Length: 495
Image 1 (tube, one colour):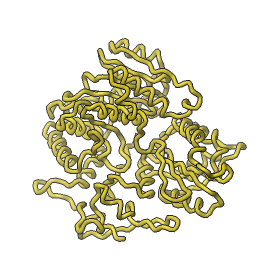
Image 2 (spheres, one colour; image 1 turned 45 degrees about the horizontal axis):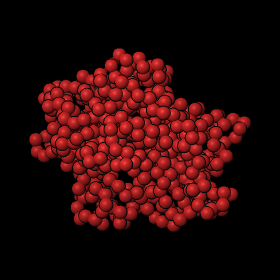
Image 3 (cartoon, rainbow, N blue to C red; image 1 turned 135 degrees about the vertical axis):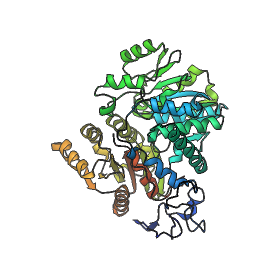
């Protein structure tokens, strides 16, 4: 199979992965699945590839989709210091006619669970008959995932058109916008022009100085929970981080918080902002408590009840999960993969508890002693490795082998560092057998080969950690979805 991922005149690099008994070639490698994706660079489906990396001279033609993404991803590289503040996004929004005022907003932040809460809320609003926008970050396989309306991704043409307008407007008004400011403004314009009734808006980082926090009168603000993260930006204590997140509170707008948000900080911030405070009930069932998604459901139900939504019409939405949240993928007989973006100690602890809870259903009729459980793990360099690894080792009895790897990201933790930390944290307690790979694809390939050769009736492989590893994992597993042109990759910001 030959893949044309670049312009006609360019040479093509063909990537081949040796999957057990199956040769996978190219970015996703199953020709039959390509027609259901928005990627048109396959020679089997089209005669001419649609993506060119040839620079376009100014004044001759607008950039195509791939070139537009390259330009957006390069924005922060041309800025001396990328800092959080609201001045640029406020100016840009005003220059565009204040599109962020054209729809009702549900504004959501939190250390863990905010992506799932946003997903459930957006689906609940759609099910209730409202034209609903959803803005999330970062994306997994395609930039277009960041903004969708009633489940429909923004189109490539719309990305190109709005990005061109944003950059022209910023240049004309001398606004040195960052990547995330451009993306946030793009979402506002997209939702406004498509006449959305409501938008579920996920905070990018923190809350107080996040670009999404220029919205003036949201229907509700939500803080799912608070844990230690991004200490260089948000603060070194839970209370400091809680203040940053809780500061999306607005006068007269109800704020819903999870039970693990510091209550005294919440009372103080909401009191000063004149925002009514509502605290979610804690999940007390022992089994339900082990599944992080149960907390997300309680949070969403609290919001929907507060806003007066019908429970019967929204109940199905509460059961929905976004991609890479305990997402079960069966790609081969006797092998099941689970994808999850749990990327900090708290989330990893919940994830492995959920795994143990659901192992019986996952193994089916396979005897316990014939079940092989393995983990493919990649983390970002700003995570507390000791705590993350400690949470995993609590559940080491159910894990036979761990494949340590690293995502293609500027923030990726080197896999050799993960290996040393596993040995150090494990100490005399011992750790599962570890295998180190330089890429997610290689780690998955090795894990699949080992599963095929091993004396097991079934293998469950948990792929977890950095969100930046998931695109490559989904590519390897040949999942059918929208993807961006080959070679156009967002490596993520350095924090």
